[in-house]
View (cartoon, rainbow, N blue to C red):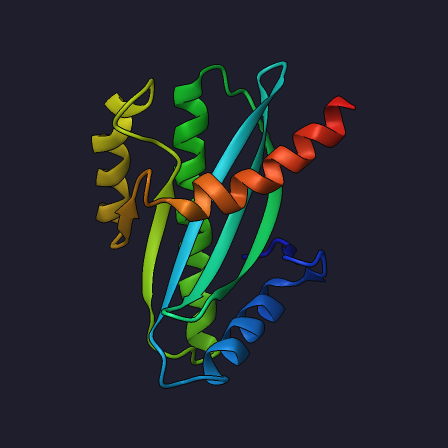
Length: 168
C-alpha cells in the first residue's frame, strides 16, 4: 500500500495513516465485530486505457463504517475481461499489502473480503469461477453482486464522479 488514499470527505492519507485511522476506528468501540472489504471498479477511458478505483471499507457490524479509496490508471486493456481481471488483481495486491502493513500496527482481529463487480447474469458471469478461485487461492473470501458493495457501490461512485468530470 504505497499509494495515497482519500477519505470519504476528500482528505488525502498515506498508507500508514489509513491503517492508523482504521485502528483508531476499531479501538473506539473494541467490543464490536468488524469486517474489512476491498473492491475495485474500473471505467473505460478509451485508447485501451481504464480508470480504476479501489475502496477499502471498514464495517462496524450493526453500526456503520468508514471507507478509503485510491484511483489509478492502467493501459493495454483491450476487453472487459482484461479490465475485470485487473480489478481483481489490483484488489488482491492492495489486500495483501494491507494485511502485511496492518500486522505492524497490531490491528484488532477482523474478517476480510474481496468484492468483485461481476454477477451471474450478464457478460461477466462466465468469469466468476476463475475470479473467485484466484481470490480463494490467496486466502480471502470473495463476494460478487449483489453482495460486492465495496466494488459495485463505493468504488463505482468515485468512478462515476470522475467519469462525469472527464466528459464535461
